[in-house]
Length: 102
Image 1 (cartoon, rainbow, N blue to C red):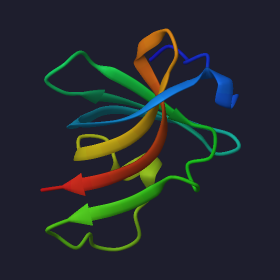
Image 2 (cartoon, rainbow, N blue to C red):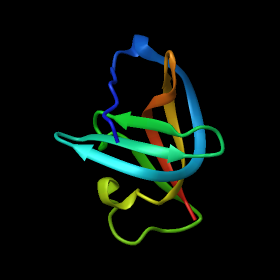
Image 3 (spheres, rainbow, N blue to C red):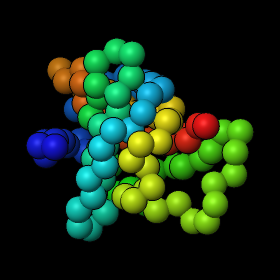
Image 4 (cartoon, one colour):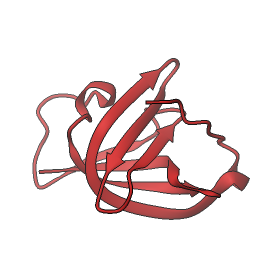
């Protein structure tokens, strides 16, 4: 996965959006940066967080076993994600929350 060139500048953010699909890829780097690739019915979306500890995680209709480790546990998971679109980049966004689904 190529690195997403993102900005946490609020002026770069577009509308808030939601999408349900499968998390195909997860990449984490120091200090707490996370990039995920979500495959859904519409084109694949690449999402990022500059601090994955600030992302809200939840589960719908099941209780995860143990503590969730996002960098290890999200790959292959079905999820609904909420994110802010990036202006001019419809296939990228800043991650807000991840709701895991079974």
